[in-house]
Amino acid sequence: MKEVRGGRRLGPGDLGDANCESYLTSGDPVIAMMAAQILSLRALSLGTGLSGVTAEHAARALTAGHALHLERAPAWSR
Image (cartoon, rainbow, N blue to C red; front, side):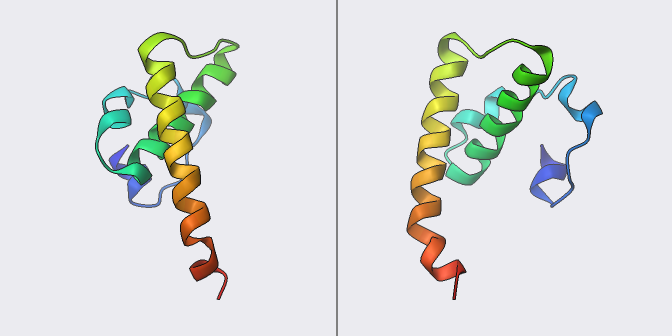
């Protein structure tokens, strides 16, 4: 997760054990959103889904990240 924060792109091998559930509740909405995206991609690659507390935290992180993007998008498009 630290390397992804630094700008490294994900590769297929990164989804084997994402180990980023703790980042969902990090308090940083951008980091939480990135963790939720990685967990979602991992679940899709395994042909499964997220469930329970992890799914709830991921949904909150994605919702907060989306709202943050909408708030900041006008500044990015200038």
